[in-house]
Image 1 (cartoon, one colour):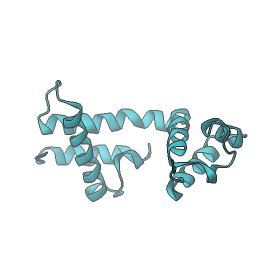
Image 2: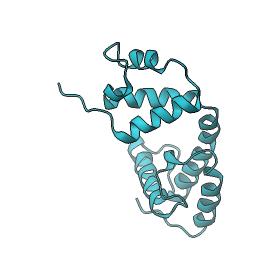
Image 3: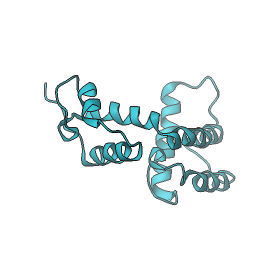
Image 4: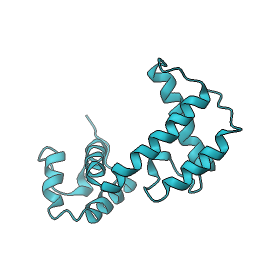
Length: 139
């Protein structure tokens, strides 16, 4: 089975989070996420990198604070799309995919919702709230 090598953005994200969180022994962490296959971030697979990024973001206090703002935007999009609470996972995912595209096209930083930082999210929330009054979501 051929495994995809991690992408350059994944590599940059891991290195940035390691530096931000001041992790001393990142190589040991890489060993854990690669199941002792490698100790170098650059040799990780994409799925290993995704797991490590998710873990590092969970350690980041800014990322924890950003999540409620992301959830607020998603909830507004669900409401505007008229999704009932009993909506299927596929319906909810369709709204999230639409929202991510909206953020990339119209958001003030033109990037996906999960790429917005804690400092950038308040402006996005405000921008989305203003647009929500006239927006019609057709999924």
